[in-house]
Image 1 (tube, helix red, strand yellow):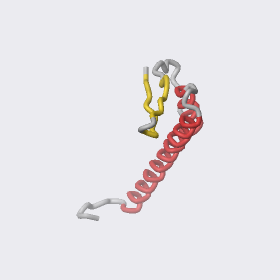
Image 2 (cartoon, one colour):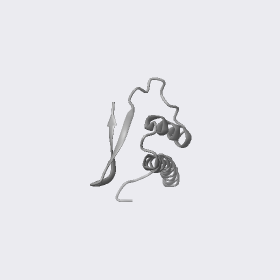
Image 3 (cartoon, one colour):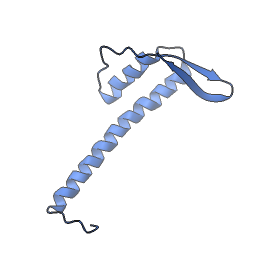
Image 4 (cartoon, helix red, strand yellow):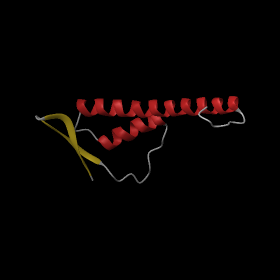
Length: 90
């Protein structure tokens, strides 16, 4: 292993495998939120995007929305020159 001595190679490998599995699980939950948020954003850009975001985060990431969530995405605008929305955050 690149000149590094590991006293417990089996334990080292098991720990690395667990860390990788956990990272992939976390990433997959993040992807679920992003994919579904963007999909719903295009379907209905005038909806309450802050509520949508936190609904998805609570469902897929199991993170409770903060009581004092005051920042809000107020609107998404589509322009003919870009299929991507621009957002205004207040």
